[in-house]
Length: 160
Image 1 (tube, rainbow, N blue to C red):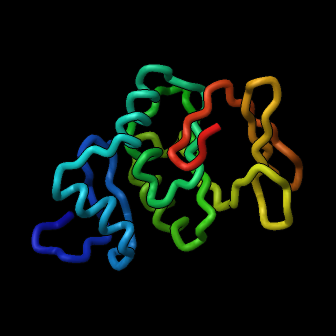
Image 2 (image 1 turned 90 degrees about the horizontal axis):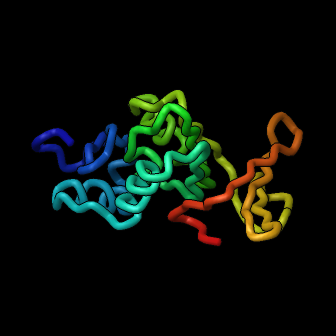
């Protein structure tokens, strides 16, 4: 955030690896990113995400309901980790892509504009499934189902 700017389009927040691109007129962005940065606030969701990535070093990390990416864009990822951000709001995808481009782990992070839910419907691009205590996700990739198995599920937006 540039000194003297009341409506910044780019914000740096504490304990984050990169800068965040935001809509400066979005009240949620102002509250969660601008005001948290000014107050030096480190949310429990971001703290959990950063600690989880550092401790587990997962092969795959999914952030369901990414919003402006305050969780997924906070850490720098280990070389073996692929991170996927799912956000249903198409208006946020441009900001997420700009933030991803500025992130040190940009090649390991993918942003997908899709609605996620437990039941298939015409509106959903992603369907969560549960089998024998494991969670997974089915995502249509080039028109074909793609199965991503997740032994450990980590998301601020959706818990098992």
